[in-house]
Image (cartoon, rainbow, N blue to C red; front, side, top):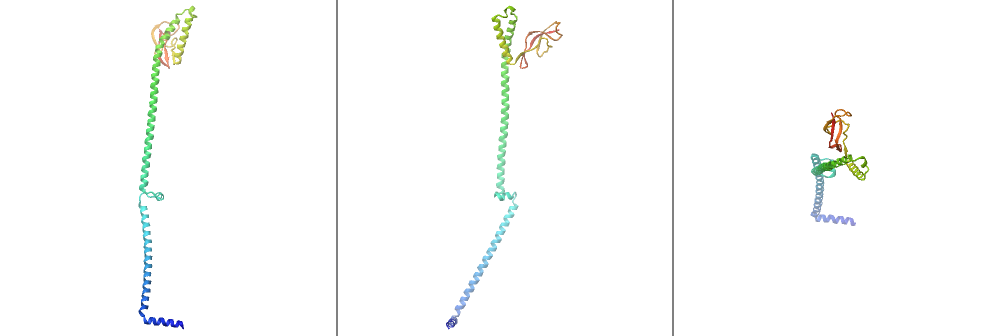
Length: 236
């Protein structure tokens, strides 16, 4: 009974206010159309966004393919072509600088080695010249000792003074020998102008012609070079 009254009341209300029903239906229809329109627009925007993203990705891929010198290494490291090119130039410049320094070092070491050898040779030559001059001045003293010993008689050989002079002479000869000085063999040797200085010719039954028969002054060698020629007499 109550339900029937309620329905009857609604029917009576609708009959009394027919415009109210139409207004509600129009509002509901408008809301449905608006919701449908928003749903369609959202779907269209999402579709358009997906298309734009796909187009952007495709453009980036094409740009990467067309970019010169672009490879997988640059994509992995994140470095651009120009960045890697600049880095390669810097490495080449550093390597060139290292090569130049090494070459300069080798040249300076070679120059220093040549300088050392040259100075050592000059020092050796200067020392040799100084030593040679001293030896040349000592040789006449040796000659005088030998001439003095030749004049000593047999009775005076054991004299203390003569013995002392012989010891001094022996000591000087030893020093010359240690310095590389040695006498030139002359008597009995074939005449050699490289070592002998012939000042006279003599007759000799003991030696053949062209052989040194007598030594007038002893000659000496200094490190295998003649420091003084032997003064000799050669057999005719």
